[in-house]
Image (cartoon, rainbow, N blue to C red; front, side):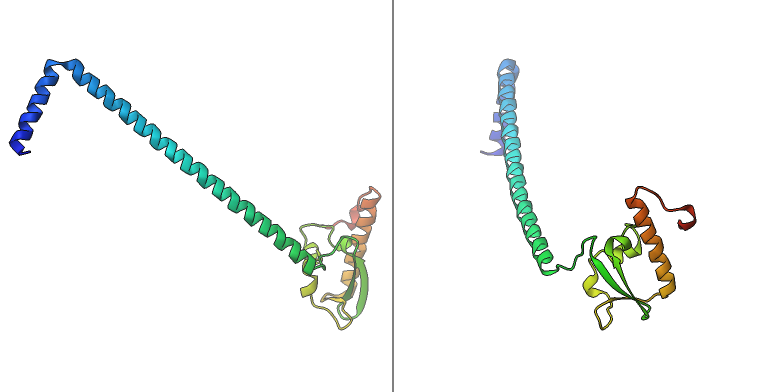
Length: 170
């Protein structure tokens, strides 16, 4: 169709719409319904896509969790040294003194360096003497005083008491 013919057709259409406004309104209404149906279809498609994507991601997450659980069990079975609270730990303090102490005595202050060091997690990587005792590079007399305090605190806590004021850290 030539440009002149297009102009004539457009002019004829506009004069028809002017002559019959209800025809124009009907066409516009039908166009609005078609647009709404198209929008509704596209929203349904997007929701369906998102639902499928969510299911896929949930499945992947469950697989990763199962793999993680399997790896944790494998690690725990190959690293049995992670200790329990009642383990007796043999210490070589300062190269002069061998001391046996319960793990929970050393780990009773959860956020302390002692608790971190003797949690059992690091037992395999800690320095040991030739007899297999964990080496603690501290003055034996000072370490004995610390152990005395920790043991007294443990004993008093088990009896429902508290550490006497003179033995509390300042």
